[in-house]
Length: 77
Image (cartoon, rainbow, N blue to C red; front, side, top):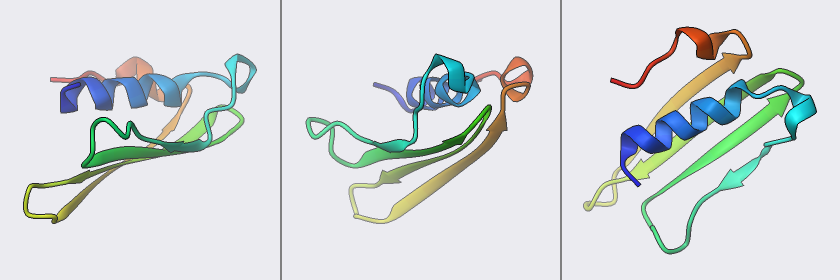
């Protein structure tokens, strides 16, 4: 999964309402070491962190605070 696709998936999860599901959790795939996501959802608001570790072991963190209206104006480029 590319970084663009991972960020897009996280943004989509962050935009879902609580009625659709609760997404609060730490998400990662043990088959794809070096990255993962943390989603904290409360109602229709989510706070998402995407953590990525480079080949040298240095971390990079991306942060996405989002509410349900946010995703309509967001695009992956």
